[in-house]
Image (tube, rainbow, N blue to C red; front, side, top):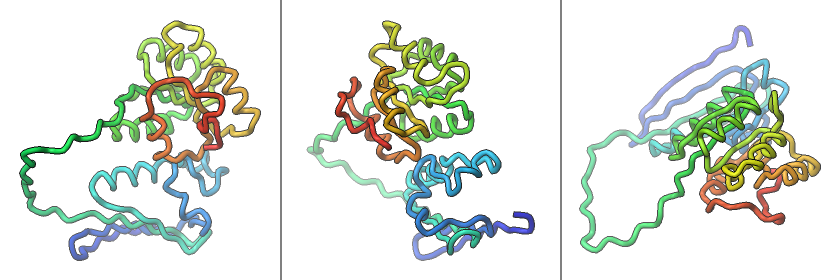
Length: 244
């Protein structure tokens, strides 16, 4: 709020560097502290548009920090008490070359590299999620309305489409139906990623031809596990048709 502050401090401790970001903002309720790093999590959903929050930023931060061998934690005394996030990163040391064994063990297969189309009318949300997936090793493209989604699906030929339901021009149900009517679109794995999570919404998803329905907030780890599975249609009893 006006007159508030954001403080950034660093300190060296043993073999790590701590970067602390502390503010005097809206704070985090105790029951939300364990969820703030989940995708699409909002402390107060009514603030999303006015404050520009997407619920992806902290997930992206966590992923980037962990890729550098670090950790990130969040702390708050509660609502309107401000927040503090602490990033811990290992200090750079001289690299040591490790000799490979003469008879190396067989390595496990790498995760399937998928081409993913992310569709959301919130451009920042689509771009952020695509960036997060790219950092994980996937190839990504984005689309921002229903008609563009169908066109991009035809030209890009993704393996997986992460598709919002509430889209302009064509809603997600109609997008999925249009894609399923094409020979090239029948094998594409299409997953709804949406704020609509009622039983009726999931029933409509199945009827439209979706392979799965994830309701925001979505666990990024659960999403990656889902994406790493072999391509194929989900069965009616598939747990992917759940509340996320």
